[in-house]
Length: 561
Image (spheres, helix red, strand yellow):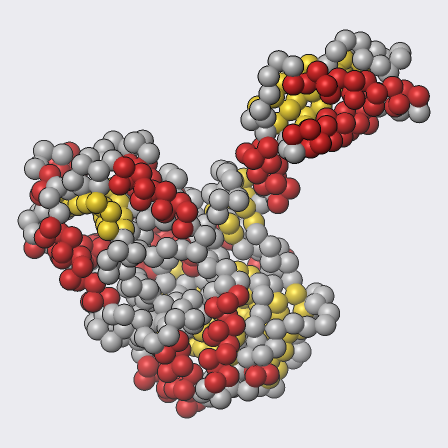
């Protein structure tokens, strides 16, 4: 398996007739999926997702792919294909369309409805092209064919991309549920037909490549969900992804069967379920879903709330309930059902929410203690099945952390794909398909772009380091009034500290060090305010580390007397 390359500089121009594939996100991480295909001078983008921040990224809302490598070629982009409507595949679309709003968005009915609702909030009216499985459509030099695939959201699609350089099959996120709730199974006949035609490059979902066997069918969750509704003495509060239509359908079915009324809580949940219902993807019996005000008047054992926050997100409804910061108060006897997976990196936040909910008297049902979640991704058995069916010449595992990509590549080799034809790439790697063979030809920038409130790309790793420093070490502000003539302190400096453990006498020991640093500077003729501030900062920083084993952020302010 080819993974490294001796000199990863900017890739050279693409050879005539070749196809270049660059993942700008989704490799080595779960989220931020975005893949750019270049052929005959044109670009095709498949998905533009976001990644959600982890605890070591304070203050960040979402993380985008880096568009810098295509920014001066936006006029060459013929279309953006969206495989399905999850945030990690569509969440970044508004940020690229801000730069060129008329790029056609190609996707299924539900996917386009979700992204259009999101774009409305950004005041962008997109150009959309609705497609369904078995549709064929051309954009520039790319011939696209769409195939039905199962996932944890309806209307997911795989896309086959035909070019003069070869045939590419991109699975998107998929699994092979043989008994899906909507009876729409993954089109394995289509996969096999493309295999007969000859797939030159197969991009496959790697999320569950380490999990043996086959992913459990969505329908097998019914007994566990039914038990929750049958045995819950008071309210049932369900937390799920706001786009997990299949799971919410199961919840609605059980609520209806057990005589409970349902209210949706949280802006994204209300919006998405309204769209899914209007388009016929969510079957809601008359009178089942009611307004919160109606629900509040019903007995507790006739109530079901469906909200967001299954990942422990601080501002989502469930986290706010856990923190007693929501109009809905968790009380003794309530049952909380977490009906989704634990995204890697979110475990601590989720368990913190579970603990707090339990503290307030709730019985929390989650995938750790009941069968209330199945993955939306193919396990190893399904991936091997697909490799044997498609028999691709080359494979590029996508959508997964390093261990997932590597495990997926090993599965491909075991089914007969030549090890040199399996390319384990990183975000930004240019993978060229020329004359039927793949190779890594270079690398483009593909770092994290942080969305921080209204700022896109303004926050850097340095800012995050400062934020972590502030959180962990505190801050000391030193105000020094310096005699302009002598360069020495005119009076003792003032110390203002936050988050740094101190008392009235703590900083007495550091005053002589500041005086010494300024005296030395005066001796050497150093008198600029900036230089003096650096000296003070260094003196205080070294003292704090030596004395307290702490590295607070030091903010020196020098004022001329």
